Length: 210
Image (cartoon, rainbow, N blue to C red):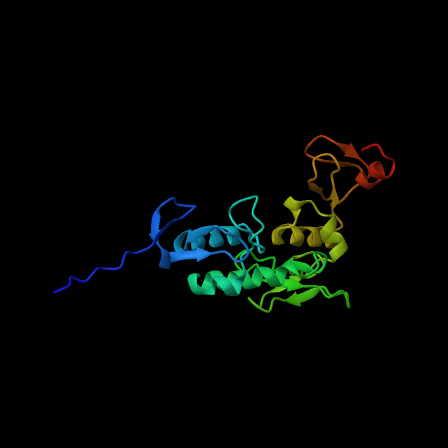
């Protein structure tokens, strides 16, 4: 009786993890001679996509091999493959046309086609209103030009409401400490709590004194 000889399993060395793996687990990159295991390539592609890289080359810097999404489909989880497709789509949109939903819990990709100047817009992903000119949540009580002139620490909803009230009440803003001052009665003389006194803060600003 002739004993059966078990076939010898062909192995290869993964150039990323440096482990010896069965040849059936090898992933060959199209256009290069390097071999890696499928697990390492899955991790490698996911990390590149996490960094926003859509054109993924062979891990060896001097190699010209490029990974193609369809060629990698079988080894990638669905969400990773979908992320790759989205990044490739984003890469062909001009930078001047591309922006993202201003709400941090959404950040959906949006495109400004430039055909029409739009202010109030609705995100098609989270359905919240935002200003397409200022790229922020919708500021209903203030014009874009005024909003953009504000400092970053003045752009909260409460600050905008205060500015609107100040305009109605004709309050003046101290150019030194930035607090609002109201002249309720009497002469034109006003004194801020910071110590600055004048008949008109606006007059000081117009004369370039402050």
